[in-house]
Length: 356
Image 1 (cartoon, rainbow, N blue to C red):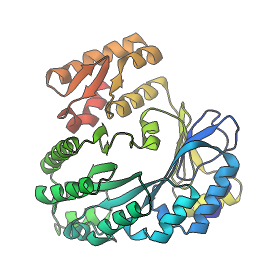
Image 2 (cartoon, rainbow, N blue to C red):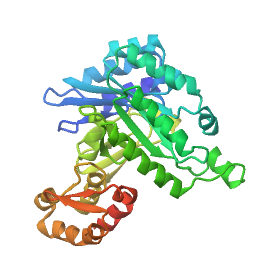
Image 3 (tube, rainbow, N blue to C red):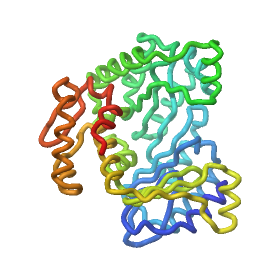
Image 4 (cartoon, helix red, strand yellow):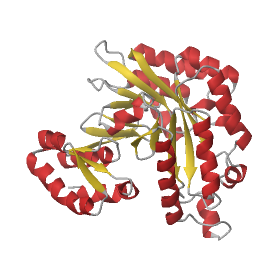
């Protein structure tokens, strides 16, 4: 797999404009400076140091790295060791995204996570002790076994540990998973939408009180610690993508690699990148902007829509947004439509209603 990713990096055509790299990306064009790099999707922290170095070498052959590049590695708590942390730092990795999920033993067992509650705490101490100042943890709320009191203890822990970035997600049950089957057989309780909404509202209150910016629906950061890589997605910047199921964006099209590992490797060995592509229409580009911008703290920029898509489009959005402004779910701030606290509970539905 590592050899295939390295080969794909060498095979991939340029996007021709400055971009970011997703999941192992690349290119060498003196005028193309890469500002962020993200190893994620799956668990790249299981790669040994030499395997990661191999990918980094391929990237450096193709890309010019910005002096202040943000390089993030996703990792599970049970993969983190003092040795790995030092090796990652030496490679240039300067940000970690850690899949903590919970500090509750009962909940981790319920979610069938490989790590324990003690490892959740220990890994944070290891990360901070190794000199990583920029890292994020993921927390999950809304599971049947998570009480509001347990949820507060989870959030209090990340605040007490002075963690600079937190991503919080409502538990979702994916089809055909073990969790889905257990619920269908009535062996465990299903999720409760009202409980999830309540815990999300509590989450917003606690994070705001602790001084975090709620800069995107699921993401909270101390000032200066937003994820630059993820922010580039929400602002519509171009990015490369390498590896099975990796998605890239050229500005006017999206392309994604096949998700089957064997077929991916076999195709790359034959010198072919197995991908599909969708050319985005102007309407699709506008709808994507509505969807992503509305999720951010800055909101939907009506002037940007007027400039890029026409005044008629921005006027139609203003008209469609009226019902949500009247019910207190949207506000207009300096020609930007911004979701209110309550509106964030309905972000996807509101965006869909504004679509063309």
